[in-house]
Image: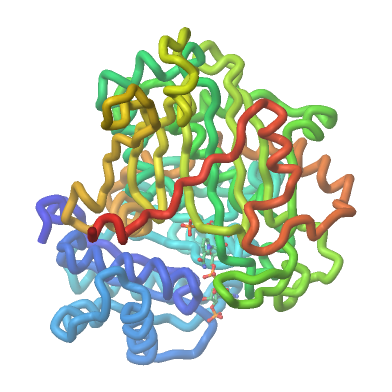
Length: 509
Ligand SMILES: NC(=O)C1=CN([C@@H]2O[C@H](COP(=O)(O)OP(=O)(O)OC[C@H]3O[C@@H](n4cnc5c(N)ncnc54)[C@H](OP(=O)(O)O)[C@@H]3O)[C@@H](O)[C@H]2O)C=CC1
Ligand SMILES: O=C1O[C@H](COP(=O)(O)O)[C@@H](O)[C@H](O)[C@H]1O
C-alpha cells in the first residue's frame, strides 16, 4: 500500500449511476487502477446503484468486462481482480424512492461494524443532472447527523444549464452540505498536462517576467475533437459546444494560464486566484457577442475513409436543430497583467483531428537585424502546451540552420512526456477520485467559480437563442470548422494554430 493510503480512513464509495456509461468507462477503471497502485485504504467498499435488477455477482461481472475494455492497465489479472472484486456491492434502487437511502445507510452501517471504525463516505452522482437535487437531498435527509468531515458529495457535469439553475443547485447543496464537502467535477483539471500548467508557471523563475501583456501578443486555447455527438444527442441537443466545453473546461484552462500566482498551493488560494480571472473577464453585450463569438454545426462528410452523418442526422437528433457543435470566442481579461491581450478559445466536434493545445504567442523582436532573405521561416516565439493526445510543452524559437550561409528557421525546444518519463500518466479520474479521498479540493470547481463562468457566457447563450442560425450545417466533417471561426481570428491578423502530427518514421530513421 502507498504511504499516503495509510492516512486514508476506511472509505465507502457510493456510485449513483453504477450501471451507467461513466462508471463503466471511467470511474470503475480509475478505482481499480488506484487499487493496483496501492492508493486505496485497506478497508474500502464500492456500492454501485441503479434501477436495473442485478445481483452483486452480476454487477461485478459487468464491471470486470468494463475494466478489461477500458482500463489503462489493460485486462485485469485474475489475482488482482480476486482481491478487488469482493469490495464491490450492488444495490438495485430508484433514487426517487426514500427507501433507497435507508438501505444505503444500513449497508454503510454494516461495513463500519465489520471494520470496527467509522468510514468516510463518498457519494458520486454519476446520473443525469435532473437527479442531482433529488439525491443530494435524499442523502442528507437520511443521515442528518453525519459528521461533515466524513461525508463528501461529488457532482458530475453539467453543473446547471444556465446561471439561474447553477445558482439554484448551489443553494440547494449549501442547505445540506458545507462547501468543503462538495466536489464539482471538471475532469480537465485532473489531466496530467493540465496540472502541469501550474507547475510550469509557478515552479520556474524564467516564465513569470515574460507572462504578461508586455511580451505576450495573444493566447489560443483549442480543443478539437474528431468524434461526433453520436448517441448523445439526447443530452447534447439541449447543451451545445458553449455549455458543454467552453463554460467549463476551456474557461478553466484559461484561468490556469491567466491567474496570478497563488500565495500557496492550497485549494482556496488556487481557487481564489482562478475566480479573480473570471471576475476580471470582459462581459459581452448583444453587440459585442456578434463580433466576438461564432458558432457552427457539422454536416456529413468522410473521416478516415468512413462516411459520417451530419449532426442533424445523428441518431435521435432533431432534423432542424440549431444547436452548435462548434464555438469560438474571443475573450479579454481586464486587469493589469492582460490588458489588451486577446484570448481566443475554440472547440468543436467532427473536426479534422482531436487535439487540445494552448498556444501562447509572444510579441516579435523589437528590431530585426537579419536581412529579410535569411529569415524566410521567421515566426514569433510561441509556447505550445499540448494537453492531448501529444503530451508536451514546446517553445518555438529562431535558430540558424546548419550551413555556410546565415539562414534562420523556427525550431522547437521540446519537453515531451514520452521521451522524459517512463511512468505512465494516471487518468484524470484517478487523480480526482484520490483527491476526493484525501479531501483536497484544489482541482475541483468551487460554487462561485461555476457561477462566474456561467455569468460570463450567458450573454452569448441568450444572443444565440434569440437568433437561431440559418446557415447550419456550416462546416463539414473532417474540416477545421466553419469559415466564420477563421474570420474571427484572421481579422486580428492571426490564424488558428495546430500542431503537425508527430512523424514517427523520422524517429525510427
Ligand atoms: N459518460 C460520460 O463519458 C460522461 C458523463 N458525464 C455525466 O455523468 C452523468 C452520467 O452520465 P452517463 O453515465 O453517461 O449516463 P448513463 O445514461 O449511461 O447512465 C445513467 C445512470 O443513471 C441511472 N439511473 C437513471 N435513472 C435512475 C433512477 N431513477 N434511479 C436510480 N438510478 C437511475 C442508470 O441506471 P439504471 O438504468 O440501471 O436505472 C444509469 O446507471 C451525467 O450527468 C453526465 O452528464 C460527464 C462527463 C462524461
Ligand atoms: O466533458 C466533456 O468532455 C469530452 C471531451 O473530453 P476529453 O477528455 O475526451 O477531451 C467531450 O467529448 C464531451 O462532449 C464533454 O461532455
